[in-house]
Image (cartoon, rainbow, N blue to C red; front, side, top):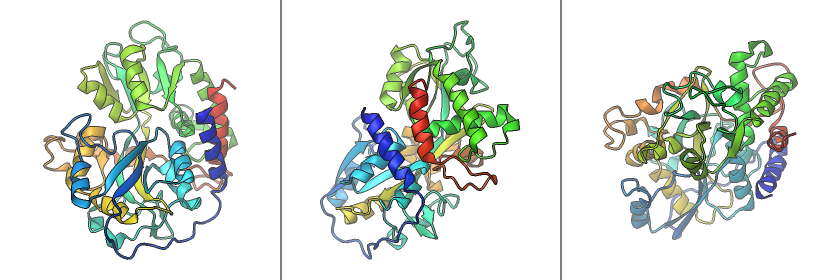
Length: 386
């Protein structure tokens, strides 16, 4: 029921994605910290060394600023949007399928980049990215980016799967057993884009050019594929730690995932690896955005500057398996190692189809496209067996 209520909130917010956000009053200078900072973040994004003492970018920040960091983890972009709508938070590490909804819903404020001393160090490919830049105004600070990978059990797959078909099509896997009940899919409407991405390669006659811009026929084909996948899926995951447990204890052998889960399982010597199959992958580029009614704006601006510290960026990239938004972080980081960001796909930026909010007016084709509020309601139906 909780997830349904949050999805309903997402529908309401997505429906509002039709007007332009008004510019908010920006901070003109950073003053004394308010003593605390409340952040909504993806799991693994705000670490204070509790899981592994080598990964801590909170403790020193708190000592230097006096801003106590409180973190609320969120498992999906829809959950982040719902929490920001409720209020009470200062910052959120929003992915591209949430960031423009937050701008359009007037939940976040424009950032005064003159107050971010390290702004010039941001990767030029991200500095003015369309998922957080509107009419030349920046509504956040880039944080990390990466692909949605196919995680698999290496005892079952002696070689990396070449295609996403292992989670979309019924088949016997290399161990001779069916994939039915042994695969997972993401519990978020944006997973429709993964189906569309798969169809781009396997049904080119549909004419899909952008997995987030689907006309009615393309959208129907994606939903049909997801209904087929429904017969295979043992669980729809949105909690990263539950997925980790499922791979360890529940016989799950393949699923779309994040590098975070892959790294965590590998650190526990579990038989897992990941790959980006031949069809390519969707991905995420996350932006730290500030609530329009942030109660602790000075601490928030201090964190925004801190978030671009090359040591933090490199350590986080190592921990999560992501890529930093500050290229300098790829060099000389002991946790990343000699290869730097290369193993995390830093050079594959152009191959990733980054999450964004689907809207009815699309650029890749002349037809009207299916807007996000329908993605949300229809995906609930798919999961429910409709």
